[in-house]
Image: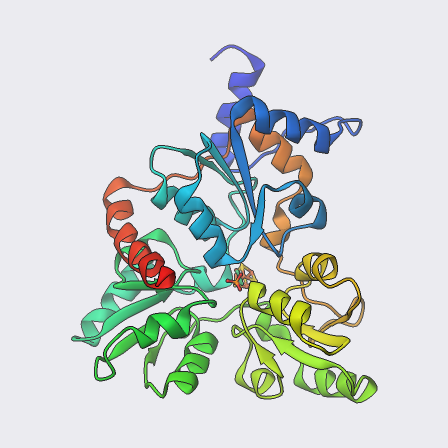
Length: 334
Ligand code: 13P
Ligand code: SF4
Protein backbone atom coordinates (compact mmCIF):
# COMPACT_ATOMS: atom_id res chain seq x y z
CA UNK A 1 0.00 0.00 0.00
CA UNK A 2 2.74 2.45 -0.95
CA UNK A 3 1.69 4.27 -4.07
CA UNK A 4 -0.45 7.39 -4.07
CA UNK A 5 -3.05 5.56 -6.13
CA UNK A 6 -3.34 2.74 -3.61
CA UNK A 7 -3.76 5.28 -0.85
CA UNK A 8 -6.42 7.04 -2.88
CA UNK A 9 -8.25 3.77 -3.50
CA UNK A 10 -8.20 2.96 0.20
CA UNK A 11 -9.60 6.38 1.00
CA UNK A 12 -12.36 5.92 -1.57
CA UNK A 13 -13.26 2.55 -0.10
CA UNK A 14 -13.37 3.96 3.40
CA UNK A 15 -15.43 7.06 2.71
CA UNK A 16 -17.59 5.35 0.13
CA UNK A 17 -17.39 8.14 -2.43
CA UNK A 18 -14.82 10.00 -4.45
CA UNK A 19 -12.96 12.84 -2.89
CA UNK A 20 -9.95 13.24 -5.17
CA UNK A 21 -9.64 16.64 -6.84
CA UNK A 22 -9.20 16.71 -10.60
CA UNK A 23 -7.67 19.54 -12.60
CA UNK A 24 -10.26 21.79 -14.23
CA UNK A 25 -8.49 21.34 -17.58
CA UNK A 26 -9.56 17.70 -17.91
CA UNK A 27 -11.81 17.00 -20.88
CA UNK A 28 -14.23 14.65 -19.12
CA UNK A 29 -16.07 13.66 -22.29
CA UNK A 30 -12.87 12.61 -24.08
CA UNK A 31 -11.44 10.87 -21.00
CA UNK A 32 -14.64 8.97 -20.21
CA UNK A 33 -14.90 7.80 -23.83
CA UNK A 34 -11.29 6.60 -23.65
CA UNK A 35 -11.88 4.77 -20.37
CA UNK A 36 -15.01 3.10 -21.74
CA UNK A 37 -12.97 1.55 -24.55
CA UNK A 38 -9.89 0.71 -22.48
CA UNK A 39 -11.88 -1.01 -19.75
CA UNK A 40 -14.69 -2.51 -21.85
CA UNK A 41 -17.18 -0.57 -19.74
CA UNK A 42 -20.76 0.37 -20.47
CA UNK A 43 -22.51 3.42 -18.98
CA UNK A 44 -26.19 3.02 -18.13
CA UNK A 45 -27.97 6.26 -17.20
CA UNK A 46 -31.41 7.16 -15.90
CA UNK A 47 -33.42 10.01 -17.46
CA UNK A 48 -32.95 12.03 -14.25
CA UNK A 49 -29.19 12.34 -14.73
CA UNK A 50 -27.50 15.56 -15.80
CA UNK A 51 -27.75 16.11 -19.60
CA UNK A 52 -24.01 15.62 -20.21
CA UNK A 53 -24.13 12.27 -18.38
CA UNK A 54 -27.12 11.16 -20.46
CA UNK A 55 -25.29 12.22 -23.62
CA UNK A 56 -22.21 10.12 -22.90
CA UNK A 57 -24.16 7.05 -21.75
CA UNK A 58 -24.47 3.93 -23.89
CA UNK A 59 -28.06 3.50 -22.80
CA UNK A 60 -30.49 5.96 -21.20
CA UNK A 61 -33.77 4.64 -19.87
CA UNK A 62 -36.34 4.16 -17.14
CA UNK A 63 -35.93 1.69 -14.28
CA UNK A 64 -37.39 -1.21 -16.27
CA UNK A 65 -35.36 -0.50 -19.42
CA UNK A 66 -32.21 -0.16 -17.36
CA UNK A 67 -32.72 -3.50 -15.61
CA UNK A 68 -33.57 -5.19 -18.92
CA UNK A 69 -30.34 -3.87 -20.44
CA UNK A 70 -28.37 -4.75 -17.30
CA UNK A 71 -29.64 -8.33 -17.62
CA UNK A 72 -28.08 -8.76 -21.08
CA UNK A 73 -25.04 -6.49 -21.05
CA UNK A 74 -21.75 -8.01 -22.22
CA UNK A 75 -19.20 -5.45 -20.98
CA UNK A 76 -16.81 -6.25 -18.12
CA UNK A 77 -17.78 -3.16 -16.14
CA UNK A 78 -21.22 -1.60 -15.70
CA UNK A 79 -21.06 2.05 -14.69
CA UNK A 80 -24.45 3.00 -13.31
CA UNK A 81 -25.31 6.67 -13.61
CA UNK A 82 -28.36 6.51 -11.42
CA UNK A 83 -29.06 5.76 -7.78
CA UNK A 84 -27.91 2.95 -5.50
CA UNK A 85 -30.90 0.59 -5.85
CA UNK A 86 -30.47 0.68 -9.65
CA UNK A 87 -26.78 -0.22 -9.50
CA UNK A 88 -27.58 -2.90 -6.92
CA UNK A 89 -30.18 -4.41 -9.26
CA UNK A 90 -27.52 -4.52 -12.01
CA UNK A 91 -25.14 -6.27 -9.58
CA UNK A 92 -27.81 -8.78 -8.56
CA UNK A 93 -28.21 -9.64 -12.25
CA UNK A 94 -24.45 -9.64 -12.93
CA UNK A 95 -22.58 -11.12 -9.94
CA UNK A 96 -19.42 -11.60 -11.99
CA UNK A 97 -19.23 -8.09 -13.39
CA UNK A 98 -17.90 -5.02 -11.67
CA UNK A 99 -20.70 -2.53 -11.05
CA UNK A 100 -19.68 1.04 -10.30
CA UNK A 101 -21.76 3.95 -9.00
CA UNK A 102 -20.14 7.42 -9.26
CA UNK A 103 -21.41 8.39 -5.80
CA UNK A 104 -22.32 5.66 -3.30
CA UNK A 105 -24.45 8.17 -1.38
CA UNK A 106 -26.88 8.46 -4.27
CA UNK A 107 -29.79 6.89 -2.41
CA UNK A 108 -33.57 7.22 -2.73
CA UNK A 109 -36.21 8.32 -0.19
CA UNK A 110 -38.36 5.35 -1.15
CA UNK A 111 -35.59 2.81 -0.62
CA UNK A 112 -34.71 4.48 2.69
CA UNK A 113 -38.31 4.29 3.94
CA UNK A 114 -38.25 0.49 4.08
CA UNK A 115 -35.59 -1.68 5.72
CA UNK A 116 -35.36 -5.43 5.20
CA UNK A 117 -35.93 -6.01 8.94
CA UNK A 118 -39.05 -3.82 9.03
CA UNK A 119 -40.49 -5.49 5.94
CA UNK A 120 -39.83 -8.94 7.43
CA UNK A 121 -41.68 -7.90 10.62
CA UNK A 122 -44.54 -6.41 8.54
CA UNK A 123 -44.88 -9.69 6.62
CA UNK A 124 -45.25 -11.59 9.90
CA UNK A 125 -48.15 -9.31 10.82
CA UNK A 126 -49.86 -10.06 7.50
CA UNK A 127 -49.55 -13.82 6.91
CA UNK A 128 -50.74 -15.19 3.58
CA UNK A 129 -49.87 -12.03 1.67
CA UNK A 130 -47.74 -11.93 -1.46
CA UNK A 131 -45.14 -9.14 -1.31
CA UNK A 132 -44.74 -7.00 -4.42
CA UNK A 133 -41.88 -4.54 -4.16
CA UNK A 134 -41.33 -1.49 -6.30
CA UNK A 135 -37.80 -1.67 -7.72
CA UNK A 136 -36.90 1.46 -5.68
CA UNK A 137 -35.83 -0.69 -2.72
CA UNK A 138 -32.66 -2.25 -1.32
CA UNK A 139 -31.45 -5.74 -2.23
CA UNK A 140 -32.34 -6.83 1.32
CA UNK A 141 -35.96 -5.74 0.82
CA UNK A 142 -36.11 -7.44 -2.58
CA UNK A 143 -34.81 -10.62 -0.92
CA UNK A 144 -37.98 -10.60 1.22
CA UNK A 145 -40.24 -10.07 -1.82
CA UNK A 146 -42.16 -12.42 -4.09
CA UNK A 147 -42.21 -10.05 -7.05
CA UNK A 148 -40.56 -6.81 -8.08
CA UNK A 149 -42.14 -4.20 -10.35
CA UNK A 150 -41.33 -0.81 -11.83
CA UNK A 151 -43.73 2.02 -12.66
CA UNK A 152 -43.79 0.75 -16.29
CA UNK A 153 -45.00 -2.71 -15.48
CA UNK A 154 -46.66 -2.39 -12.03
CA UNK A 155 -50.18 -2.96 -13.41
CA UNK A 156 -49.08 -5.96 -15.49
CA UNK A 157 -47.25 -7.50 -12.51
CA UNK A 158 -50.24 -7.04 -10.19
CA UNK A 159 -52.62 -8.37 -12.85
CA UNK A 160 -50.49 -11.52 -13.05
CA UNK A 161 -51.46 -12.37 -9.45
CA UNK A 162 -54.80 -14.15 -8.83
CA UNK A 163 -57.55 -11.67 -7.91
CA UNK A 164 -58.26 -13.27 -4.52
CA UNK A 165 -54.60 -13.27 -3.42
CA UNK A 166 -53.94 -10.60 -0.75
CA UNK A 167 -50.93 -8.41 -1.52
CA UNK A 168 -48.52 -6.20 0.41
CA UNK A 169 -47.16 -3.43 -1.83
CA UNK A 170 -43.94 -1.70 -0.73
CA UNK A 171 -42.50 0.88 -0.44
CA UNK A 172 -44.34 3.54 -2.54
CA UNK A 173 -47.81 4.29 -1.14
CA UNK A 174 -48.63 6.66 -4.04
CA UNK A 175 -47.82 4.17 -6.78
CA UNK A 176 -49.57 1.50 -4.71
CA UNK A 177 -52.73 3.61 -4.32
CA UNK A 178 -52.73 4.35 -8.06
CA UNK A 179 -52.40 0.64 -8.90
CA UNK A 180 -55.14 -0.22 -6.37
CA UNK A 181 -57.39 2.20 -8.26
CA UNK A 182 -56.38 0.87 -11.68
CA UNK A 183 -56.79 -2.81 -10.79
CA UNK A 184 -59.61 -2.66 -8.24
CA UNK A 185 -57.38 -4.34 -5.64
CA UNK A 186 -57.05 -3.52 -1.99
CA UNK A 187 -53.32 -4.03 -1.51
CA UNK A 188 -51.83 -3.18 1.88
CA UNK A 189 -49.51 -0.24 1.24
CA UNK A 190 -46.16 0.48 2.86
CA UNK A 191 -45.96 4.09 4.01
CA UNK A 192 -43.13 5.31 1.77
CA UNK A 193 -42.99 8.13 -0.76
CA UNK A 194 -40.69 9.84 -3.23
CA UNK A 195 -39.60 13.25 -1.88
CA UNK A 196 -39.41 14.65 -5.40
CA UNK A 197 -42.87 13.63 -6.58
CA UNK A 198 -44.51 14.52 -3.26
CA UNK A 199 -43.16 18.06 -3.65
CA UNK A 200 -45.52 19.02 -6.48
CA UNK A 201 -48.05 21.69 -5.58
CA UNK A 202 -51.62 21.17 -6.78
CA UNK A 203 -52.50 24.87 -6.30
CA UNK A 204 -49.52 26.02 -8.35
CA UNK A 205 -50.22 23.35 -10.96
CA UNK A 206 -53.82 24.53 -11.37
CA UNK A 207 -52.63 28.15 -11.60
CA UNK A 208 -50.08 27.18 -14.23
CA UNK A 209 -52.72 25.32 -16.21
CA UNK A 210 -54.94 28.42 -16.17
CA UNK A 211 -52.05 30.28 -17.81
CA UNK A 212 -51.60 27.45 -20.34
CA UNK A 213 -55.05 25.93 -20.87
CA UNK A 214 -53.87 24.26 -24.08
CA UNK A 215 -51.22 22.24 -22.21
CA UNK A 216 -51.74 18.60 -21.26
CA UNK A 217 -50.67 17.60 -17.76
CA UNK A 218 -48.55 14.45 -17.61
CA UNK A 219 -47.47 12.88 -14.32
CA UNK A 220 -45.42 10.04 -12.88
CA UNK A 221 -47.41 7.61 -10.68
CA UNK A 222 -45.08 8.30 -7.73
CA UNK A 223 -47.04 11.60 -7.48
CA UNK A 224 -49.84 12.08 -4.95
CA UNK A 225 -53.44 11.16 -5.84
CA UNK A 226 -54.60 14.80 -6.16
CA UNK A 227 -51.90 15.44 -8.80
CA UNK A 228 -52.74 12.23 -10.67
CA UNK A 229 -56.42 13.17 -10.62
CA UNK A 230 -55.79 16.23 -12.82
CA UNK A 231 -53.32 14.48 -15.14
CA UNK A 232 -54.18 13.72 -18.78
CA UNK A 233 -51.54 11.00 -18.87
CA UNK A 234 -49.93 8.94 -16.08
CA UNK A 235 -46.89 6.80 -16.75
CA UNK A 236 -43.28 5.92 -16.10
CA UNK A 237 -40.50 8.20 -17.34
CA UNK A 238 -40.23 6.33 -20.65
CA UNK A 239 -44.03 6.25 -20.90
CA UNK A 240 -44.13 10.04 -20.47
CA UNK A 241 -41.47 10.59 -23.14
CA UNK A 242 -43.29 8.31 -25.52
CA UNK A 243 -46.60 10.04 -24.85
CA UNK A 244 -45.18 13.51 -25.62
CA UNK A 245 -43.53 12.14 -28.76
CA UNK A 246 -46.66 10.53 -30.17
CA UNK A 247 -49.50 12.67 -28.82
CA UNK A 248 -50.91 15.42 -31.05
CA UNK A 249 -50.86 18.32 -28.55
CA UNK A 250 -48.13 20.95 -28.65
CA UNK A 251 -47.67 21.79 -24.97
CA UNK A 252 -47.18 19.70 -21.82
CA UNK A 253 -46.83 20.37 -18.11
CA UNK A 254 -44.40 17.68 -16.99
CA UNK A 255 -44.90 16.23 -13.49
CA UNK A 256 -41.70 14.38 -12.77
CA UNK A 257 -38.03 15.08 -12.06
CA UNK A 258 -36.70 17.83 -14.33
CA UNK A 259 -33.85 15.72 -15.76
CA UNK A 260 -36.41 14.07 -18.05
CA UNK A 261 -36.78 17.31 -20.02
CA UNK A 262 -33.43 16.75 -21.71
CA UNK A 263 -34.45 13.49 -23.42
CA UNK A 264 -38.00 14.74 -23.96
CA UNK A 265 -36.71 17.79 -25.87
CA UNK A 266 -34.44 15.56 -27.96
CA UNK A 267 -37.28 13.14 -28.75
CA UNK A 268 -39.98 15.79 -29.32
CA UNK A 269 -38.17 18.99 -30.37
CA UNK A 270 -41.32 20.68 -31.67
CA UNK A 271 -43.19 20.40 -28.33
CA UNK A 272 -43.27 23.00 -25.55
CA UNK A 273 -42.41 21.48 -22.16
CA UNK A 274 -43.20 23.20 -18.88
CA UNK A 275 -41.94 21.65 -15.62
CA UNK A 276 -44.67 21.10 -13.01
CA UNK A 277 -44.20 23.49 -10.06
CA UNK A 278 -43.00 22.34 -6.65
CA UNK A 279 -44.54 23.58 -3.38
CA UNK A 280 -41.43 25.26 -1.98
CA UNK A 281 -39.80 26.31 -5.20
CA UNK A 282 -39.93 29.97 -6.14
CA UNK A 283 -36.85 29.98 -8.32
CA UNK A 284 -36.68 27.52 -11.20
CA UNK A 285 -40.19 26.04 -10.67
CA UNK A 286 -38.90 22.56 -11.27
CA UNK A 287 -38.18 19.47 -9.19
CA UNK A 288 -34.79 17.88 -8.95
CA UNK A 289 -33.81 14.66 -7.20
CA UNK A 290 -30.86 15.50 -4.96
CA UNK A 291 -29.79 11.85 -4.98
CA UNK A 292 -29.76 11.52 -8.76
CA UNK A 293 -27.87 14.80 -9.06
CA UNK A 294 -25.06 13.57 -6.77
CA UNK A 295 -23.52 12.01 -9.87
CA UNK A 296 -21.41 14.47 -11.84
CA UNK A 297 -19.15 14.16 -14.87
CA UNK A 298 -16.16 14.52 -12.55
CA UNK A 299 -17.31 11.66 -10.32
CA UNK A 300 -18.17 9.57 -13.37
CA UNK A 301 -14.66 10.09 -14.74
CA UNK A 302 -12.99 9.32 -11.39
CA UNK A 303 -15.05 6.25 -10.74
CA UNK A 304 -14.17 4.84 -14.15
CA UNK A 305 -10.52 5.70 -13.72
CA UNK A 306 -10.15 4.09 -10.29
CA UNK A 307 -12.95 1.51 -10.69
CA UNK A 308 -14.42 2.73 -7.43
CA UNK A 309 -16.78 2.96 -5.64
CA UNK A 310 -17.99 -0.53 -6.42
CA UNK A 311 -21.47 -1.78 -5.55
CA UNK A 312 -21.47 -5.15 -3.83
CA UNK A 313 -24.27 -7.38 -2.57
CA UNK A 314 -24.01 -10.20 -0.04
CA UNK A 315 -24.24 -13.46 -2.03
CA UNK A 316 -27.03 -14.96 0.07
CA UNK A 317 -29.11 -11.77 -0.24
CA UNK A 318 -28.30 -11.53 -3.96
CA UNK A 319 -29.56 -15.05 -4.70
CA UNK A 320 -32.84 -14.34 -2.87
CA UNK A 321 -33.29 -10.91 -4.47
CA UNK A 322 -32.64 -12.33 -7.93
CA UNK A 323 -35.77 -14.51 -7.83
CA UNK A 324 -38.41 -11.70 -7.74
CA UNK A 325 -36.38 -9.61 -10.23
CA UNK A 326 -36.21 -12.49 -12.71
CA UNK A 327 -39.94 -13.11 -12.24
CA UNK A 328 -40.57 -9.46 -13.10
CA UNK A 329 -38.38 -9.64 -16.22
CA UNK A 330 -40.18 -12.81 -17.35
CA UNK A 331 -43.67 -11.32 -16.88
CA UNK A 332 -42.60 -8.05 -18.58
CA UNK A 333 -41.33 -9.95 -21.63
CA UNK A 334 -44.72 -11.67 -22.19
P1 13P B 1 -39.07 5.19 -13.72
O1 13P B 1 -37.82 5.58 -14.43
O2 13P B 1 -39.20 3.72 -13.66
O3 13P B 1 -40.26 5.84 -14.29
O4 13P B 1 -38.93 5.66 -12.20
C1 13P B 1 -38.69 6.94 -11.82
C2 13P B 1 -37.89 7.05 -10.62
O5 13P B 1 -38.20 7.72 -9.69
C3 13P B 1 -36.64 6.34 -10.58
O6 13P B 1 -36.10 6.51 -9.34
FE1 SF4 C 1 -36.00 8.03 -5.36
FE2 SF4 C 1 -37.72 9.91 -6.02
FE3 SF4 C 1 -35.15 10.31 -6.49
FE4 SF4 C 1 -36.52 8.50 -7.94
S1 SF4 C 1 -36.83 10.69 -7.90
S2 SF4 C 1 -34.50 8.22 -7.01
S3 SF4 C 1 -37.95 7.74 -6.40
S4 SF4 C 1 -36.11 10.07 -4.46
